Amino acid sequence: MHVYAHEGDAVLLERATGKRSLLAMAMDGEDDEASRILCRTAARLHAPRAKPIPDPIPLSRWFRDLEPAAGKHGGTLADCSAIANALLADPRDLAVLHGDIHHENILDFEARGWLAIDPKRLHGERGFDFANIFANEELPVITDPVRFRRQLAIVSAEARLEPKRLLRWIAAYSGLSAAWFLGDPNVEQAEKALTVARIALAELQT
Image 1 (cartoon, helix red, strand yellow):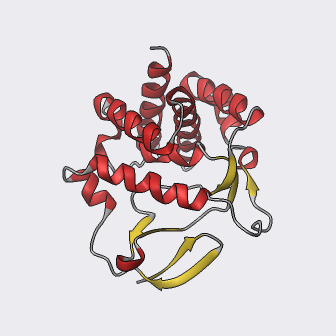
Image 2 (cartoon, helix red, strand yellow):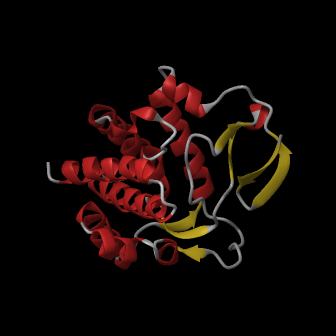
């Protein structure tokens, strides 16, 4: 299958022919290495570029569905919305973002390495891109607090992010994901996202 792969300023139409899968790795004993590959791929996308991309979507617009959902449902969503608003009001390390970094959007292009597909062309704090690593609903272990804490240490070190800041982005992103699922509606997937958010919120209190 031909897919669009984003690397630097180029969008390439080519075939991802490699047999490796990050989702399969994460489910078959190589979870830590899969997370490191996700982080390294995201970091390459965040590197400064010679020319800005036209009309990037600001993160504040990307998060526009969270506050209304928080007003409707309250609870964990309200906590996530408050954190998101604070992060968006005080952005750091601004970069062009992929917007949907997860195990199935980073593919094996063999000699060209691991490349990202389906970029959302966002602009904002680079920490946002690492939050989705914790929220891929196709990965059954995302709601395991032990796994979460291990991946937090790996991702924060690999991405050079302060763990508490990363936890806040995980809570914000998971709340947004839950808001989208509730809008579908897909209550089961929304609850998974909210569980991840609750784990992140609990870790922020430690």
